[in-house]
Amino acid sequence: MPNTQTLHTEEQIWDYIREVTDPEIPVLNIIEMGVARSVDIDHSGKVTVKITPTYSGCPAMNAIEKMVKEKLEEKDIEDFEVKLDFSEAWTTDWMTDEAKVKLKDYGIAPPEKSVNDDDFLKSLSGTKIVPCPFCDSFETELQSQFGSTACKSQYFCNSCHQPFEHFKCI
Ligand SMILES: [Zn+2]
Image (cartoon, helix red, strand yellow):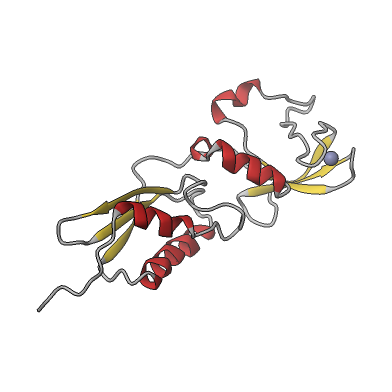
């Protein structure tokens, strides 16, 4: 039996994965999110893609795994495996700087670098002050720990009077 499976390079697989966007943040793909960790093709042509879930319990993760599988199928890749990699916990530091800019342009306050979290501005009540993604004002207030999903919290800007979401830092 001749091997009829089209051979793909790792670069091509990365290009395919780049077409998979975060189900909650459609302006970001899963490479920018830091969710796609590695692509391997073994000697038999089997493709293994490793993804690391963002927030544990985030319903988006099952959706992402499914979307990666569907994308590989769509590209006629027959022999593949999508593995969830829990060896390291995902952190918002894995998001590219470009991703954070896109997030802000989308109207979601990006996560701060977790290493700097202690230095981040704190209000008298001890809650974190998140600058408004629209006008950069610090006159914002936390309205709910949970926005449209558990991964985001809901804020309101008292300066430009717009609600916005903040992508939580872990
Ligand atoms: Zn504002």
